[in-house]
Length: 332
Image (cartoon, rainbow, N blue to C red):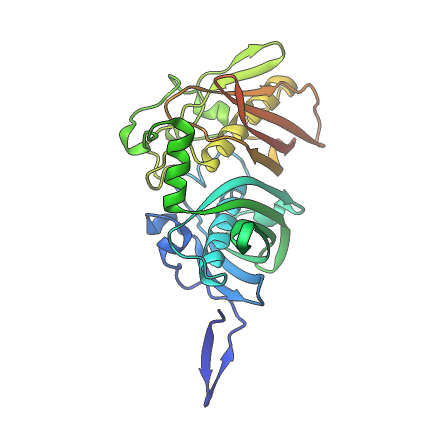
């Protein structure tokens, strides 16, 4: 579908992206308007579209960092990419609203982290997306891959990709029941924090304890191990009801333990490292009703060069996700 504007007797394609207002929240699978960042989207062909997102100057979760000078959050870019991809799937690929997207993998690379330095105006993120479809028996759509080029105010920042499984909401519910032999609990039925008291916010690179998602880590055999411990009333992480920990919660946990592992190994502080990349693979659902361990080896390297911290998530005796964060050591 191509949005158009009227010019004389014939409609002509609109080519300029708008930042004036956000798109409808249900098209990006958000409950709160405050958590919607995508403002526009334009089709450029059957499997290609452009999108716009406004990056806020202040936000209780995405801008709650110790880092100086302040930058737009890498996970804000990732969330904007997820929203733009979801919006594009509904708006341009005509997927129905009862579609459930299951995140299998995502990654992000920053070629120019300084393009994210925050100034006096909200950031204007432009996303150029190419979609690859995977179809199953009978031509039924089974998965989508979104490859995304990112630019802030026409300055290229980097690129991202997201791989999602595609199913109907009803089939998703059936799948979850079959896997567990029961209905999974919902986040609305949980309260407080799993995993005990959180690690100190400053050590995790945060100002507010509400945004800490890890318990106090322990050092075992050269690795830090911490319990996954988010607050269920954090509406940026749990914008609506979930029957598992969403991919963004695990990604945030990986970032925080990567900061802790970096500080433990190189003696840097959590306000120093700059994220330049991440790679995540989600292989099983992160269930709400069993503890999850977050494990990261302590790196011994130091200096300004990038260093990747691999993070493993274990529930029971199974690996449920693997996420690597690449950090550039910096104390500015």
